[in-house]
Length: 444
Length: 140
Image 1 (tube, rainbow over the protein chains, first blue to last red):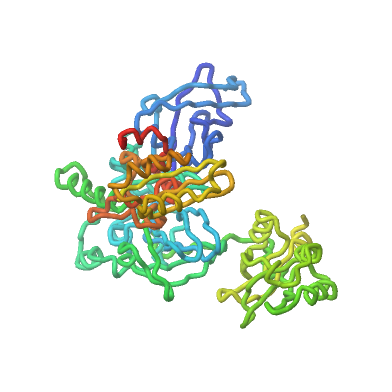
Image 2 (image 1 turned 120 degrees about the vertical axis):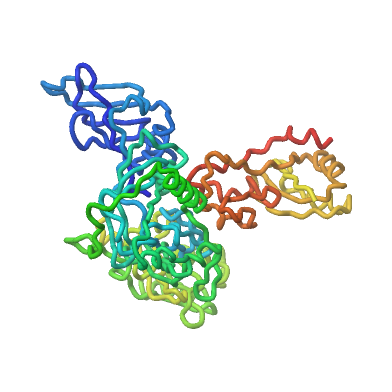
């Protein structure tokens, strides 16, 4: 999980330093408190190898006993005169080294697909165009919060399996959303006792780095209700199939599927069968459950009652905004269209009379079949081409009505084009957005 | 059947070498993947075991380089069996077995001519192996 990290205390140098900025193995680490306390965030990326090495990997290296390089700078004070430090450290050189994750163990999570025409790289992995694959996350029936959905036994002080050793729940996690069954927890554990088998750095191409965290919670069967709840099966846990191709807070939900379907390797969305795979290791989840069980049986692990239970009524609010973000719908204009059978001459005339640069070619039901630009027409005249078929572009880059203008604008720049026909799910043309309209609104 | 990787340089890429060899030797060649442009080509093909030696000889005579592709390497220490790679494989060479371990079928894999799984692995456990021509010495 991305909202993971470790707090470390590196000890004082002589003369001492009040660290202002610090890097471990070229990964910037946060300096949130006093002189030599540092927080290694899992998602912070190396300056030399961004996307490949990050805070998650630093944590993995440290728990694996490897030596890491610490660089730090400071402005220097009367009490902390030093302005620079370069040294090498292992976990044994650290005073405290605690995993401190502010959001872990999502009760369940969305299943991701991509409705766009191109492959996208997300925190849900590599998603192929036109719903050609799907990814999901979470252990389903093995997820602790799913087994105790009313948090009767899980709360502050619950002793847990964390990263290969014993840790604790220290409260609800950020974005804890119990009413929608998206509960999360905040956890802490002594990373000096952890191992890389259950703490792994991870690299998501074109998204960033993160940390795989191995976590397990024992749930005592205190009453009949808990016996029933912990018997939950994958076929009773449902989640939404969500189009990550739409870069919005509320992405379109295309279907509802159970974790049983997800773990079967194939899901159905509309009339499409889609191959689906997990992003979290079920194999490791089973290993954690087995390890925790053996610890308890051998008397090495004692269950605790929570000091305070996780809240069941908190709401996960969206960000308060002072200004509206522009969307494609805000600048879209009516598209000037032509049919497949029209001659180049007629299209040329339309470009002049309507004073546009793009003519959208449509078939029956106003479905998009191509695009012709004034440049195409110029070329046709120069080369004596008379048929639309000779000059039309068939692979049209398009936009969606509810897409942020910024992403549409980026797509134009990326493909070096100046307009995008706006289409709906059935490929019907709704309008056109041009670079000119975008720059008027975004002031570029 | 055995897989061979053929490389054609810029000089010979426009010649119909594969067709000629099929016609001359009357050997079926199954093309699995092909990446060809004006600067050269790389073709992964399946050929009958018994025809392997004479095919290699003939392709080399025509100026192509031939190797037995070693396709991908999976670092089992790094792999955590998350499964992120499974759905990206176009030939379903990656599967999850009963105990939730991710298994690679290297017979099916298209290797460096595909590599769709490589950048999808969060643990960076998959490497597509660069081909080299010395690997073929054993085939002579």
